[in-house]
Amino acid sequence: MIRFPLIPVLLVVAGFAAATQDRYLMDVFVLTCLYGTMAVAWNLAAGFTGLLSLGHSLFIGIGAYTVAYGVTAHGLSPWVMLPLAVLIAVVCALAIGVLCFRYGLKGYYFGIATLAFSEIAFFLVSAAVWLGRSDGMMLPAGGDPWISLQFRAKWPYGLMILVVLLATLIAGWALLRAKTGYYWRSIRDNEEAAEALGVPIFGFKLFSFALSAGIVAVCGAFYACYVAFVDPRSVLGVELSIQLLVFSIIGGMGLLWGPLLGAAILIPASELLRIWIGASFYGVNIVLYASLLIGLALFLPQGLGALRWRRRVS
Amino acid sequence: MTALLDVDGIGKSFGGLTALRDVAFQVPQGAIMGIIGPNGAGKTTLFNCISGLMKPDAGRVRFGGREIQGLRPHRICRLGLARTFQIVRPFRGMSVLENVKVAAFARHDRGPAAEAHARAVLADLGMAHMAATDAGILGVAELRRLEIARALATDPQVLLLDEMLAGLTATEAAALCDQIRALRDRGLTILLVEHSVPVVSALCDRAVVLNFGEVLTEGPTAAVLADGRVQDAYLGSAAPCPT
Ligand SMILES: Nc1ncnc2c1ncn2[C@@H]1O[C@H](COP(=O)(O)OP(=O)(O)OP(=O)(O)O)[C@@H](O)[C@H]1O
Ligand SMILES: [Mg+2]
Image 1 (cartoon, rainbow over the protein chains, first blue to last red):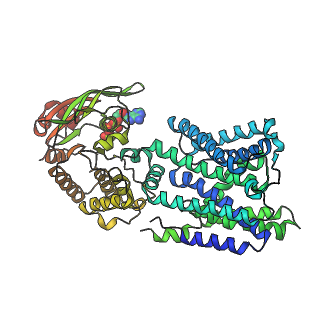
Image 2 (image 1 turned 135 degrees about the horizontal axis):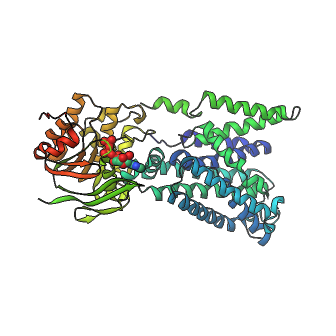
Image 3 (image 1 turned 120 degrees about the vertical axis):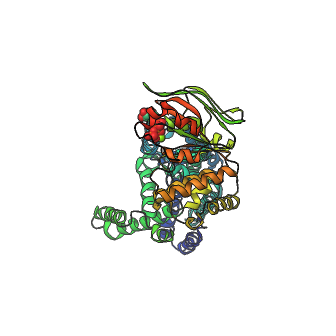
């Protein structure tokens, strides 16, 4: 039932090849893969394990700020900071998970708890002088670009995020078809029944949440290098968490690559609307984008990916 | 007679309400044992305390000589005690086969082995034809059988069945009774909650009567059903019980 996402993988690779000729296209490609990876990772927890996190920006922000801080304050390479960023994010996820799962927070309550943690981080960072407060931090250019990860060209970023995305898809596929995926879905569908059938739900929920957090932390670290600037709004804000949810719902939460599909449609669409309409009638593009979302949600409540998928059932 | 399951002085209350008080009985290896009692007598709560979903406030549960009260449900399941739920709890986002496969993973770590085991269980119960069906669209009779299939796929020694026959037609119920007997003949020990007196007397070797959370009487089914206190407490005026 969980088949290898061959077509999405091929399309993404083809997308990279097509975008190498054009800086602007490559930018759209990078953003699509970046948000696609984060949404796929979010959905491993939310869509497959039932852990509806509304605070994933916390882990993205940890990834971005760890790298930005190491680079600006200590002149360290992002390569050095990356493992640390993932470690901090995973430890935070485990701590939040232990707290929430011990006290039996489920569903929307878990979502609100995670949201609260990310909001706390948002305000703490906005006040922390050593993290640039709400002004943020700029990453300096210079040195060997393969060490500082500050490239003039865009394609190296495209290549890096392509690798992260493919690794996420392959790892997700391997986990979902194995015992882990079955246990996650059983927890999502009915915790008590899962536990009665031998599923150690506490450990598998922690694993799902921590894995998801670790992957988005990698994406946050990448974001810091790519944009060379981090501030609380862009990497810790609740809007970011909500975006992952929107991409996943529109693309289809029942599919590994559904959230990627959502990002691959909505990110280019919002770019196009901005270029075509935003320049002359600012705001109209946002209204159109919102209408597109409402339309998709109304006519495809299972997500776009379900068009094909639903028919296979029964 | 060796007791495979030994329930010893179990107590459980919810706030001011005492759902179970000093409940004690033993289930011999290879028996089909029935638990009867009026609505709200505490039968499901007793199952919850045995299977680990709830922690009893007092008492012990021994399974194969080992104390299991207070263990997490997944540990108790892996020790060899499986249960079904009175209010069915299917994994609605999965097919019938996938539902059973989740349970089979308790004994097989690798996917193909778990799937083969799950298919074997489904074939055994005559459910192979619905393997690919979405669990979300099954009717109540099929969901009950799915509950049993999942529990069996964990390879239990003891099976707890909570009102599996309620709401089934006579034919469906008879088929399920045959299946339960076949399981016992294969060596399973079965503890079941059942409202229908004819079913209990036809199926069970022994019976326990619960009333307001306490054991009213316990013993061979025929003797228990003939007990005057049982007639009063449970059967009321609807006395005649066909066999
Ligand atoms: N989680 C709970 N919280 C509070 N009270 C509960 C809980 N579970 C059961 N009870 C109460 O405990 C008593 C026993 O309930 P239980 O479900 O065990 O009865 P039962 O014998 O299974 O009844 P039925 O034949 O209707 O299934 C009832 O009064 C019920 O309201
Ligand atoms: Mg009950």
